[in-house]
Amino acid sequence: MEEGEDLELLFTMTDYLPYVFKDQVASDYFENLIDFSTKNLIDKDPHFSIAALHMVYMGAAYNYLYGLYRLSPKRFDSILIGFHHMIPRDVGIRSWQDFSLIHESSIFDFFRHVGLKETDIKELKAPVKARNDLVHSNGMYVVDTEAFVSASKSMLRCIGKIENACFPGVKKLFFRFVRSEKVDLYDTEDAIDYLRTYFFAEYAVSKRAVSSLSEISFSEYPDRKNSKKFFDALKWARRDLVTE
Image 1 (cartoon, rainbow, N blue to C red):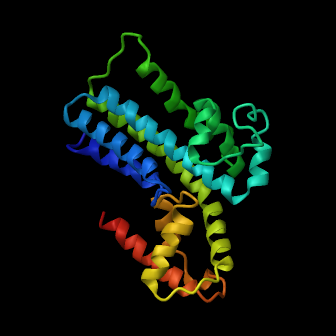
Image 2: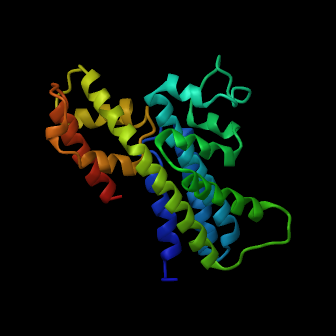
Image 3: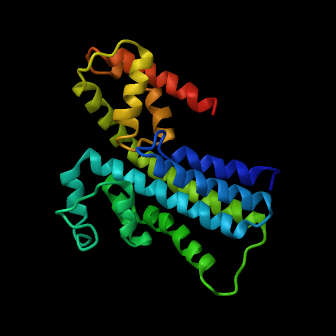
C-alpha cells in the first residue's frame, strides 16, 4: 500500500455524494462520517473506519435512487411493489433517507431499473455482507490498514458502476430542467446559484455527475434563453470541484 492511499480512497468516495445537499442536516451527517473515518485511519484503527465508510457508501446509493425516483416517480413506484409496507404509497418518497427503511442488501435490486445486470447487483451487495461481518460481536477486529484499502476499493468500484448507470438519467433530467426554466438569469453567477438550489440540491446530483454534465458540448443543449448561462455555470462548477 502506498503512503496516504487509504485517505485518498476515503476522500474519493465523497465524489459520489451530492455536490450540494438539500439540507444542512444531511451535509453534517456525511461530513461527520468522513471525519470519523479519517480520524480512525490516522489513529491506525481501520475497523470502524470501514464501518463509517460503508455508511457513506449506502448513503450515496440512496441519493442515486432518490434522483432516479425524481426522474420518473410513477415508473419508479412500479419497482417499489413489494416494499410499500415500508414506504407506503400514500406517504411516498420524500428524501433519500426513506430508502434506509428497506433492507440494505435488497436496496441494490432497484438498480436493475437502470440496466445493471445480476452479476453487477451481486457485486453491489457484497460490501453489505462484509460490513455485517465487521460489526457483529463475532470476535473479529480489523487492525490491518490494508483491509480498509481493499474494502474502500470494492465500494468505489460498486458506486462507480451505479454512477455510470445513472448518469444518462441525470443528463435527461438536466435537459428537462433547462427546457422548463424560463426565469430571468442575469449572469453566470446567478445561474450557478440557481442550479445549486433548484437542480443540484433538489435532485441530489453527485459531484461526479456535475463534472460529467460540464463536459457536454453546447451543441447538445436545447435552444432556450438560459442554456448558455447554465453551460457556463457548469464549467464554473467543474473548476470548483477541481480546487476542493
